[in-house]
Image 1: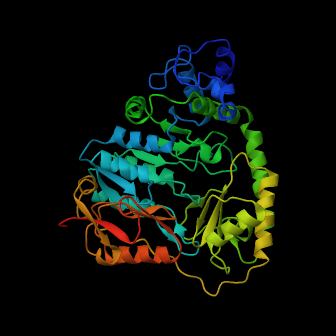
Image 2: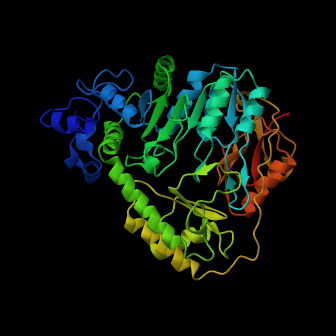
Image 3: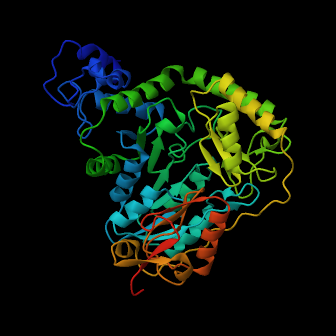
Length: 476
């Protein structure tokens, strides 16, 4: 069984490339080409298959990956999970139809809704007040949406969340299938789920129809690599057709070889590598027990405890709350960076996210634990615990795809209340849109944005750039 990396290593030497790319596999041309693997960077030449019409080594590699991830059909994605979500939504819907969608969906899901001119019914997940994060999406909330929009053609949910909160995907999928509605799961942060008893099962085992995973987030694969798993032959054919619409026609063979290599590594050495990961997490847990002011969700003193409104947790995510200490999330991130040379994944006003992955070791997670203890010993209790500001329910005044293209103007945010939003306003963290085009800028929404800014959160505004201005529809 020959991997794509093996073929690249064996077949390329000695061949003069009179084809793209322009560096011609001449790694000596520049230092960066040498280090970035230009000697294996090719286009689709004979013997190396075609990603959009696979019949050779790529078809075989994707079939092997499907076996590793226990999927019906698996597609390699070199444009990240984004291209998978775009293709999945278009594979299951037609313009003008309805879709049920978790409000905490990624930006690409909203773009998919706009591009396909869909009518979304948003489903709001719960909130964990203590940890001030988005929690699970409940089957009850999904059922309510199903009765509201029985004409919906698909359900799109996100599990796990950025912070590692899982929803009961199996129960949600059974519920949706009972209404004849297929399920798309954005599992970008959960490619490792279900591969070892260390972690909970994922959406593939739960029976979801299309599952999108980013390999690079937690598994040993290069950035931008992802997978799409599909149930059913007919849906797989349509998914491949839609990937042809959104995915590059010049896929990087370095990325493709990385995907194939990652799947092969898990197949051949997965059990051993997951055990190393588990031992490293256990070592961190022992150190986290010594924290007095900082709190780690699901770890240390909170091991085995679920946050409010959370169905389950991914133990690979380390969300460190600063809510009970006299410093903020950005303060903690800065101290980790400057004093300990540790770069966390994300800093929120009330916490820091440290992501672990298969490449972690006892050394890396012990170092993180010791750094937190060192910082914790210099802290004092916070004067008070601020409750999470609830995400306001949006009021739709116009379909997203119409509002997104309608004439707009920029107003000072203090004058925008009551107007219809002409852009996507997203607070980071948690990265959930407060408003999308076509929704009313209600006093509650304006208050949420103001509170988030005062807490130090970042605001992504797709038109106004967030400099005290808001994009609103003209005459609306």
